[in-house]
Length: 112
Image 1 (cartoon, rainbow, N blue to C red):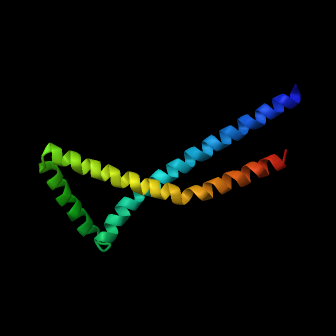
Image 2: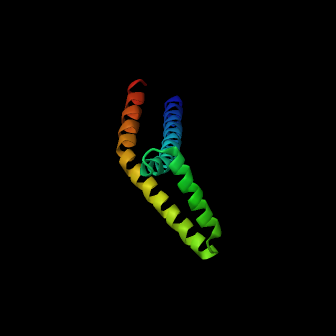
Image 3: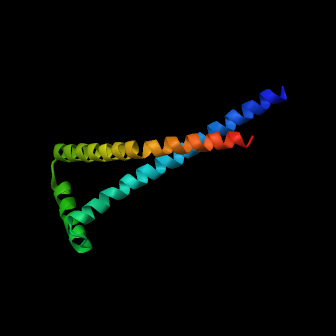
């Protein structure tokens, strides 16, 4: 019975480790994607913060004065671009996550 309980505890510990690792990886990926957007805007303005904020102000005025259907179309496009960026970033980072999880799970079982 104790071997069965030890195996169950090991599986539960592995599941918790994987869940926490996936949560942290997902958070890092989303935050990275969120950081790429303003960095891209800053690069587009030549690194000049004053120009960046001037363009953002211009964009906000156009957005607020646009019709509801135009705003909805802009919102859909922005969400689509962000979702694509997030997906691409996740696909690039996924192999490293899988390799890390495999290595750490094997290493954890070697110490048992």
